[in-house]
Length: 469
Image 1 (tube, rainbow, N blue to C red):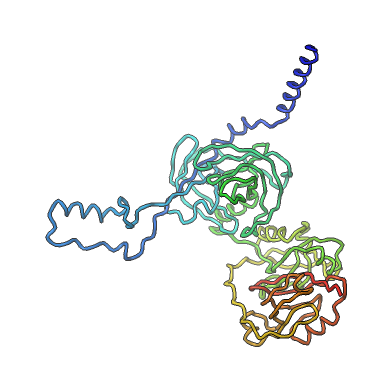
Image 2 (cartoon, rainbow, N blue to C red):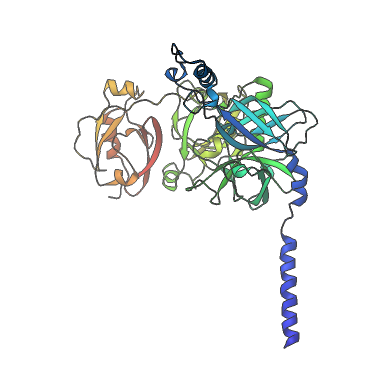
């Protein structure tokens, strides 16, 4: 019995040693690369109102001892806590050195609106950094410190990164410098709100406030991303963190260094994912690609052979599985360069070429038209009205459409139509009047999904509508 127990213990120890042998060892990687990771702190002086910055007149007849105190109090506004420039705000983040002469990368949100940026190195030196430039769309900032012979990171290739691969982060979470965390790649090409031009790398690496701007390394010790965002309901790490691929980052940094600003490529379409029901209505075998829901007037798309309802499945030979795949590819393409799209139009494949444009600033959102008088419900369960001239002008719909006044029970409600939506197309029929709409309703097939193009709060998208009976 004793021999059996000893054998079991031996096998258990051996098994645990085998497991430990299979786990990655990050020690050498940290020693090599930790010296190139920096802590970034910023300060921003508050901008007081004119009333707060106006210095009071010195009262007449003030005693000499009080006069000196008065001068010190009002002539040194940063030393008091009474609203005269006091209480500088500070933020902490991370960064990493990409050149021996002092170029440092971090997130734009780490240094946004900073009056002073301090870079602290692993040897505890602190240098004031200059903001060379930044790009809010990709959340990348390039800094420069006056130094030489600095240690640098090695840039990797995020396109070769595999889901499930081990990765390592070094940064300053909550101000704790040179903190190391590790995990695996959970997904690639994630599209996040406000980050249309970044195909994020999702990991389960523990990232917390202060890690922003720090590097994400692969097992070869090469940087494959900048840690940028976390998904959290508490403000702390919850298992979902996101990094900007380093190829996107370096493209932005190179543009900042050479041109002083960042230009993003532009197609000029509003797109959405293709659902199973929409794929059926467009004659596609499976849901994929980016569905064109709106073409911006004057954009490169408006000058190309693109139409509403086209589904973009390739850009310059690269497959577009979801709508989020397209903007980053277009965004990193050189301005005025030719590009090729493979599209699906009414079930048939087609190739479209266009010249990449410059992404403009975001336009102001237009106000919706006022609610018209309601009309009787129709067979899909909505009441509609034709757009009048004023509504067409406000909504920028010169060709018209019909506006949804009321939504009751029926196929329209099941499809997600809402009051205030403007119906622009039903399948391939353009809806410019009530007559067009009524004719399209008569031709609706039963038991089959049809694509309905609607405009809602300034944006357009397709919904799949199915009339059951």
